[in-house]
Length: 444
Image 1 (cartoon, rainbow, N blue to C red):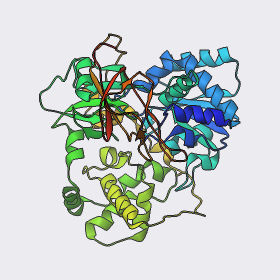
Image 2 (cartoon, rainbow, N blue to C red; image 1 turned 135 degrees about the vertical axis):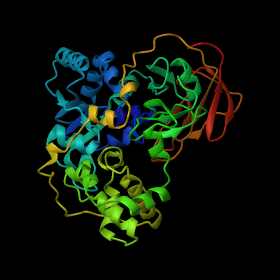
Image 3 (spheres, one colour; image 1 turned 90 degrees about the horizontal axis):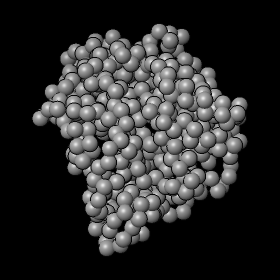
Image 4 (cartoon, one colour; image 1 turned 120 degrees about the vertical axis):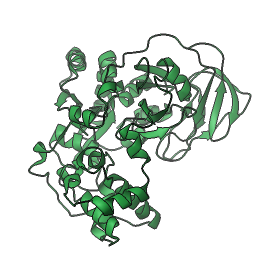
């Protein structure tokens, strides 16, 4: 692998554009056989990746071809859903124009969570990532569509300064828009015409795995969507239900029907995770070491509590609690030597997205979110020093400094897992703390 390409990616501050934001330069340090571009975008209401594949198909295929060449991988594969007909047509055209037989497209069913890394690897390659392992263990590396576009831009000497975000839900004009990093979410809502309701809650991400946020928080490198939902919406009620309440409900009504396990995507891959056993353990206060260990295999997709459980219990919350306890205790969990195979009934237990949307009460919000093409004004951005897994970047500017868009304002020391931060607008540094504030007047 070319050290130059790794340095280019690292210098540009590229991390996974969704999820936890793992620094991309570190992910590409291995020697994969297959590079998989995750275009599944299976979270309901989000539109960013599928729209990027339509608009930037040539750039994405060029970047994937460059990565395949530099890593020595045998192939690069776009994994996207069959229903993304426009994206498929554009990618096919771009691949044909490159005349690169190493690039392919794999069409996915419209199921949740098709974009889970281990589910995606199995679907695309037929290879099974064993419990506790990462895709590279079977020769695969998975990168997000927007991450791939950022790599293309880095090869053009353009660092990460902006983010593509879908604003959806209870807003007047759902849209997908390119905004500078550090933009306050309240300003983002104005672009979408503002909320249609008074009492609302904001979710950063999708309705299944996103987290509640506030209007004063900012867009970061991992922000894929901002959803506006009524505060009495079932998704919000479920997120706000405390662990103690969920525990009491589990003790009262959990019938051990095992549906949470039967529909768990990791269980269906053959991993030894049984959410119903975790529920039994915490409900009756009888520690089961195997159930505690299994919690580390939970990807927290929410299939159990959002779709499977007839009583709206939350095995996911239980597993999250158990994982926190394991981490605090410093326990080392290993599944070495445990070879697992997908469940024989897996294909019959996949969750259709349309059915999930209806189950979540999101049908009225499942509408197009077209590109926002108008200009807008922004006076200030706030760039958190930690927008990714790893260590925060260290400021190299001070209050009063003038900066230009793309200029490094915080960087990560050598051999430290992290990502550089760049100015997302022209302006003047007004504050440096856990975030770098840049003030500006004018439109972008």
